[in-house]
Amino acid sequence: MDVELLIRRGRRTVIAAVAMALMMFAQPTQASPSMTTDATPRVNGPVYAIAQVGDLTIIGGDFTTVGGKPRANVAAIRADGTLDPTFNPSTDGIVRALAGSADGTTVYVGGRFTTAGGAARANLAAVDIATGTALPTWQADTTGTSPGISALTTYADRLYVGGTFSGIDGTVRASLVALSSSGDVISNFRSRANAGVKSIRVSPDGAVVYAAGAFSKLGGLDRPFGVGAIASTTGDATAFNPAEGSDLSITLGLSPDGSRLYFSTPDNRLFSYDTATSDLVWIRKTSGDTQAIYPTATEVYIGGHFSQIVTYKIKRCFLASLNASDGTVTPWDPNPVGGDMGVWAITPTPNSLSVGGTFTTVGGVDRVRFARFPGTP
Image 1 (cartoon, rainbow, N blue to C red):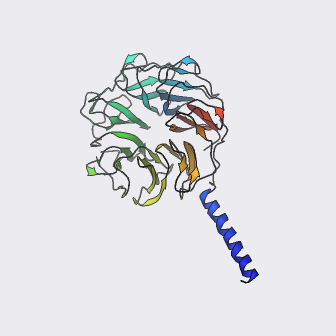
Image 2: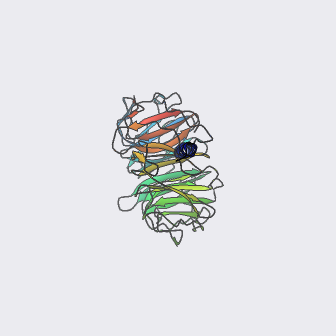
Image 3: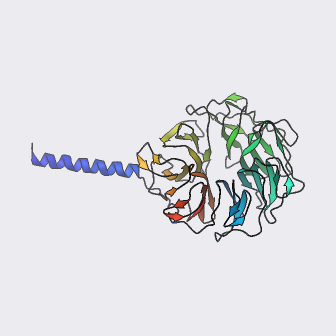
């Protein structure tokens, strides 16, 4: 065979290999946060939820100490990474969801508990961010068989509440409701979810509420994959209707402009859908469930109990970043390890990305169940 032809073929092979490598590790147009974590206090149990409220990062989960100090399931981390010494709204049960009020004065706490902030509260409480005590006039208890709260999201003066309950604040409302800032049910919003809701997101203009969970009907229409969208004014289903998924969905993420919805399913798949057309943009397979999703305009941060992005056979333990446009893997690889369920929460803070879960080290450094990555995601 001609030597020059062999050389040309060899060059094409090298070029193709380089192109494939660039595709697998696509560089985002926006820099990821550092992979080197800031110092943070140790948490002695799983962190399931994180919310940024003013200058405080609120964490919730199933723990009794933070930084060696008594904290029952809720605590606040200051901007310098240390435990806030005064905020201590102790719940007597697990915390699964957190959300801050628009004015930054209140944190809403959801889970399975009977007391919070020094008051009797059934699974849902509004806590003063300055004092850590439950607001005395705000009470919206949930009822039902083994009721609990899994999702909280605020938009303007509304609080959207998702979980497994059949009643809230004395009304017969199930799974997904909207509350006013005073804790009253907004009567004209009826989600009609026929089973539990695990995750909620709201469009940037507040007009659409996206939900994921175990339901097969939402807003009066069939949504067989446990993901759908409803109008915030009425709770009626919108036209958004993914054509592929699983029998339920685990969690959601919404792009900053509202054009892409990301959701995960128990068969270890992550979906990206166009919200305007319901068109599938991409699917990625991981080796375990994705339990947390935080999208930016350019990247999608995912956390869970996976060890590999199976689609590309790229190792990523518990935490990864994908290119938002095509789902390719970015070089960001902080490598949290330890624990059995990995990452449960990913939330941006003013100058960092906060992550919670069951891990015990990050990049070989002791970071027990809570870590903060400096930089702007």
